[in-house]
Image (cartoon, rainbow, N blue to C red; front, side, top):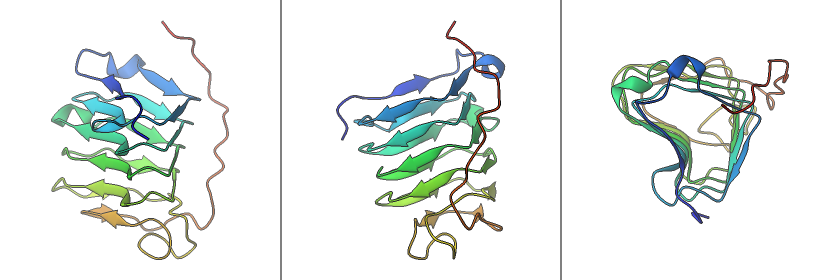
Length: 158
């Protein structure tokens, strides 16, 4: 774990057209997280992030509030997602399980909507599945692992 640093998105990206989709990211997160958002709001969906030394996604800076984090799997990371910025995005239909510290850690002041996520337990987060931290709206949660359809168009790299 932590064999390499991260994939970084910063404020120079075009938020509306930056898409990470159908990816598998492993053994990263030497610093911050496997995916590092700094004042950037890309679309991250249908992606698996596992075995990160720190977070699956680490986000900082006010420019992260319109990121799309949807239909991903975060497993065996220190934290599935570690979000430090406000305003937060909405994070839905993801799977968080077997992350050692938290499925989702949020230190911002505004409420983050994280409904319809699977936390590794039918009883929701902070039971025998992944824990959460921060001002989060988690209800309702998914009572089984989300099976997101990969029906969206796949875009080649530019």
